[in-house]
Image (cartoon, one colour):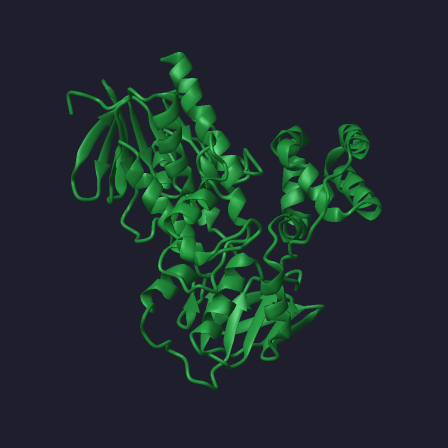
Length: 427
């Protein structure tokens, strides 16, 4: 308690491990401590899953070390040559979980398998307290808290599952609580929904699965797309600079996607997305979230082509547009095109996405820090703003709102390097 460490990293997912690696490279003399929580496999989406649960990004783009961005691929080649991984492969999520554990164990910092339950300002910096009672003082703290779990809809009860990955872990290695004639409802059609559907099939459930989302479409598939040529990229940048508001931006993107491969257009935005997002202003950001977020996600966060082919070939799998609601008494209904239809299901897996607003209103560490005034919620209600105290940093998903691209590995490793470099320069 009287001898503070130089840096405490809270969170053991990709952002946390990337920050530990950045500190090892940029501040090799610092004393660093990591707290990763108690969930096995580092993150629910990377630990103990079925091999059908696969990354939606090619293996060579998933390295956490900014100095060696193909490190995940290199690690697989060195440690698991029997897996015969090649560039362009979309490998099981569990393999990435193994890589996270290996990289966390390779740094000099000790990584505690314990959750941080309290963070307070003190004379030496920040006092951290673990769930088991351990305490530590750190001069700087990096909060890398990952995606918050989803929450059930108000009024929903069994068989509604608000946290699909927790449900999956609870039944790992055990028979699924489903009869062959049961019907499963999946709410949402994003990548978590894809994993749940594939997992149910891999575990032997052959019954009907109904997937409902507002757009009624799966995420798109990856496909080869040469990058925009420099002249087209310059014209795209100029047109976006001249666009007014969210509607103007969308008109530009649609026009260029009609003239060029749309994947190349979306990919060309990657480096500038956060700057353009910030330039929209709060009301225009709200407009994007209401009207274009689902469309963007389907095209930005793609899946492996063979995964999409598997879903489309499944005759007992039905994907429908609409909104799911829970009425009085727990009755589940689908509303679409002015009609309401009651749905019966033995299991409902809620895959609508992270519960950002619920996380800020609940009892998580992030919510407590907001209530205590240590952090400020972003006006969109989807995350928090950059802390006012320069010795505290937030990385990753909790920055959503202030940032638009803040969950993928390239952005996480960039954030980690930027934060540590700023601290080193100001030390």
